[in-house]
Amino acid sequence: MLVALTGSAISPFSPFDMWEGRPLAAFLTRRFFNDDPLGFYRFYREVLLKETQPTPIHRALAQSGALIITENIDGLHRKAGSPTIELFGNVDELYCPDCQSRYPSYLVLEGLPLCSACYQLLNPGLVLEGDPVPMFKVASCLMARAREVLIIGSTLDMAPMSYLPILARSFGARITVFTHSLTQVLTYLADLKGEPQPSPTSSEVKV
Image (cartoon, rainbow, N blue to C red; front, side):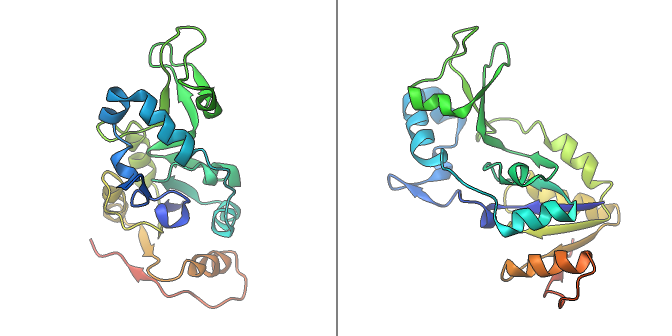
């Protein structure tokens, strides 16, 4: 099974981008949401509700049939048609903490989003700092079955994403990390399909 671990270098959102003089990561916390839901959803509207489309890399990964495990929250792998595990959720959904009903995120454009059944404040469909990561167990099980793992656009400095390639390597997977231009990814995926293109520069992860 081919698995791709992807990160913020192929996303319109980076935790290091700035908003109102602070990095985005400073606003993606459970504490900020609980303390200031009005401020949180203003941030959500102004920063996270972007109209974005899959890039050539997203589309090439979808065509390759790779399973995607991503730390990105933009939903672009799903839009491209890839089977995707979104470790930290996505910006497309909201949910009710009481009845677990799901809602589209555009409701935040109307103000504080409330559940139509419970009238509770809806939560973002994101794993905020301070939250558990419920999809990590699923991702770990899939990594144990991987035979080849591509690391694309991620520095793997964010837990628990950083543990996944170590797990895959312990089960014998071949791991390739793309350390230069992301156009190398397109070439490599073309090679996997048997198209006559030169191999990219890559390096094995040593763990």
